[in-house]
Length: 578
Image 1 (tube, rainbow, N blue to C red):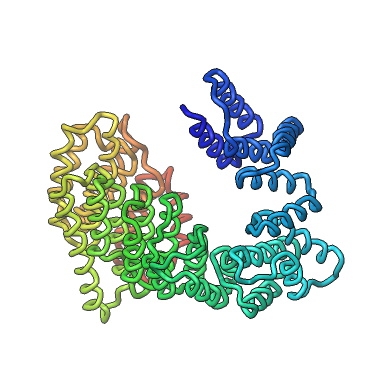
Image 2 (cartoon, one colour; image 1 turned 135 degrees about the vertical axis):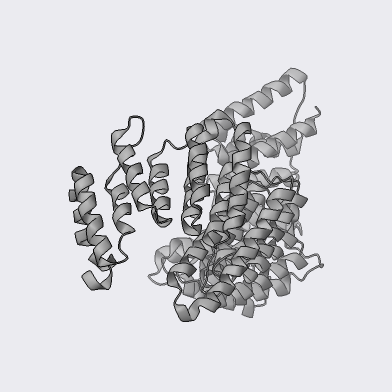
């Protein structure tokens, strides 16, 4: 490598210093210097400047002495490059040599050169700190004086940055000074200072991030910033403004201002800005969850996607899909299938396989919504309920079609379980049985260590049979599960008992519970198991009383628990014998 390559290595080392310990940085620095020595390479003035700045950032005695020695040697040359001046300024700031910094600024000014902004920033904060230390209350004019003592020319490229520096220092040193900072900003604007990204971010971040976001004030400053940075026009503002947009978007989410968020995303697109993948997932999820409905949530996603589709990775998509499913409002209780599938299609365009969890979660949400509709429905609401159930069924069917036809969808047993359960909950029993048949067909190809996943499959199938009065299919499925030892979980036996009860086979259900009590290798019945026998006898008083006596006689060891439940759930009994 040439000497300039080592300069770049040192710059990378300096830029990454905040993420490493002093010891690790010193060790890596010594490795670089050792390699240079072995290869007979020497640093140019730019590389030496990087060395000085690294030593200053390290701040330990040996490093500071090395920086001081390099600077002393530079002094013999009489002429400094810009790299040396910048390093020298960092050294002077570190040792708090304000007098020498002032001399450097005067020397630059007399040479008709623009003094280093870093030096002016330091002097502004020193001047302002003296004001803070000497006064009980800081006024906007005090902040203005601290800035103007260093920079009077509001047209200077550094003017806005110095006003931003002063505001940042004020907010960090004076509690509850945000209102004062806003007055300082107004004063700066009145003096003709432009709102660049540095000045804007110092106020927008605290305004947007307060407990009750002061969004209107933040948007006013944002408007000033947009005026200074119109799209497709190069300005002197080189700092990354992404944090401004991020802060505003989170504030919009906090106060449910989706329309404003969409406008901000449009502004970003016109300026060809985007978010890094590391931040995109959390931001997208927060924005979509704050939307008033799924259509608006999807519009927010689409605007984010338009900024930079390549910034979306698997984790980002999964975060967005999860937020899309969780999001629920009275007007939009579940995610529409067509919008959800649009996001899935974007994943496919990126060459990503569709994890089964993404589809499973949506199917689960559809099933839960169907159950809610069933529980809340009154007779007069039945037509409206059926319309909603039919809409859920269409969505489930669309997902089923995708599962069958799309090779990028990862199909596993939990996904098929969710599909069967969703069909069951919307009353599409034939479709649920079709999924069960596929599960049965897959068993021979399933790894042995995944056979436990068939336990919930069996429970869902038995529940479907119970609700559809399909006793023959239930008994056939139970025999199949017994043959392959897939019904060893107590919940399977409870599900079979409940299914028999729903199909009107109460006596058969009693016999199954007796087997659970008497046979070896079968889960023992519990109070919850026996309560199923009583529960399905609550149609009239006579059957109910007979069921109680029979349970008391057949299962005396469980009767006390059953009696306790009956005593605490009187409201669940028929009106005539509460």
